[in-house]
Amino acid sequence: MAAPLIAPSADDALLIEFYRRHWLEMGVGPAETRADWRELALAFLTEARQAGGFAGFVVRRDGIALGSACARPMPAAYPAFRDVDAVRVGYIWGLYVEPAERGQGLGRRLVEACLAHLAAQGCGRALLHAGPRSLPLYARLGFSETGEMALKL
Image 1: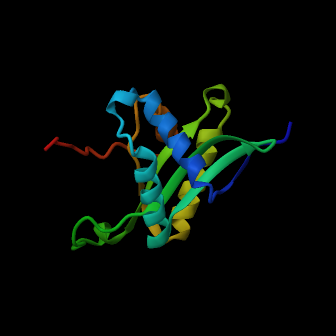
Image 2: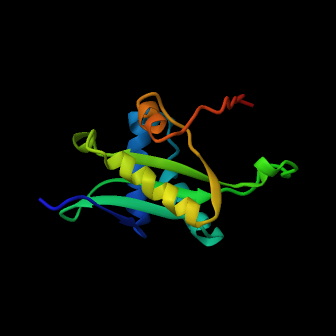
């Protein structure tokens, strides 16, 4: 059995499918999912690629896709008046590893690929949103909680 290989991917259909599986595991079922979710996700990836700096990574073993993650630099959310805010920020999303393949370091390797990509894009900071199951992985990689708050409008 060949060692897993992580590489950039242009297979948006695969990235979208793994993203869907991620949300299914988070408890978002078909009743809560828009009928046009595939088209929306494809349009999002198309826009991200056109804006520049996007990368989707897929981990494969023996040619079989086992998981994926995506990363892209984010546009500024507000004017950067402080030096610390002037750092370009990247966002990691859609991390998914097939359940039978978890615990082997594949998620870690996908995140590390995203971090290297974001650093190469000039990002000095990476953000992501983590579900409870993923918190230990991100903490081991050095991520810290930022105190973000949200309000449904």
